Amino acid sequence: MIYTSTSQLSRSTKPIFFQFWANCILVKGYRRGIVFDIFRRQQIVVSKLFCEMIDKYGSTSINDIKEDASMEERRGYLKMLDFFVKNDFGVYTDNPSELPPLSMEYDSPYLATTVVVKSDSDNDYEALVEQMKEIGRELMLSVQINDEGHMTPEMMREIGELTIHSTIGCIHIYTHFSKEYKPKDFLFMMQNLRFRKIVFMGAAETKRVEPISESQGVVRYLKEEMDYEDCGNVGKRYFVIGQPFFIEGHSCNTCLNRKVSIDKEGNIGNCPLMPHTFGNIKTSSLREIVSRPDFQRLWHITKDEIVVCKDCEYRYICTDCRHYIKDKNNIYSQPSKCGYNPYIAKWSDEEGYVPVSSC
Image 1: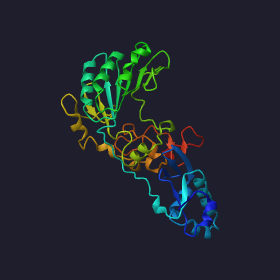
Image 2: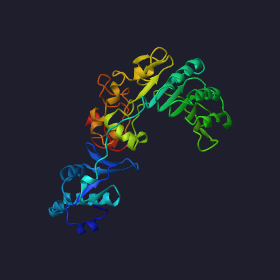
Image 3: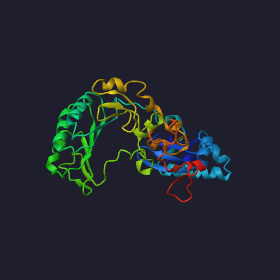
Image 4: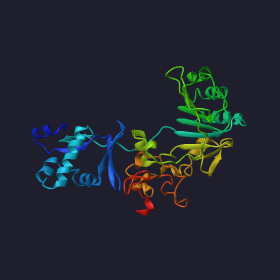
């Protein structure tokens, strides 16, 4: 039986246990822990003492803990359990086996969840079209085109025609601003709903184009220029609290797993910033290259293996660039753009922060 308040506990003659809901998962860091609700995208910070107490008493009945609740830390622990039950992060139960933990086994039907295509529509638009034909034959969840030219809606429409019957889930396009287009120029997005985002970089002002309907993807003009180096940043704004990402982070690298990069010459790599390539889309099968063990080598580096990250309570909701790392000779080195110190639980903009190297 499940009990959702402490007033109900006295009715049971059986031992009672506390259990987090399967979607509420405690992640322990060096200094503290966080309980993440990966369904409702919420989080509650807990002390290191609570993490130690739940390790010690997690399988002990509430009845036995109360019998010896003379210690202040045990009374505090019981208050925390009441707090979690009251806020629907967990329950009391006399049969914890009926509430099994959520499986952290990751799987995906896609050959690649993200394909980043670098192009220059001013010079090699035909090559880009050929690449899209090849990509359209494979199992791809998302395609992002980073265009260094000035891609027109007419060019985008042709890409839409090539991919309308493909397995591609969504298409994002980033290109340089040349002029403003009328909303009707983007009607092709209604014919192929895979277009979810089109961004013109380097515009005179930042603004959003009003969609023709709610089904149409987003069209934006941004004042910022395209910056390929603006990658690998670690911060709260980049965190993803959600079930798919959280589960993926337990067994895979959340930046490089099932990610494919294709440069302007058609060379295939893991990431647009990483120089090593494994073949060319013009002469090799994309499926064959992506299926190779050496191509997938970086997919399975997890935060539990990375220096410093393994001690961080945010590790399963954080992206992990393996290009920007502190020690280029150690693939398990800490991300160089991380401003968080898990040993003191402070960000670089907080008072009292010191870098990890000082701890």
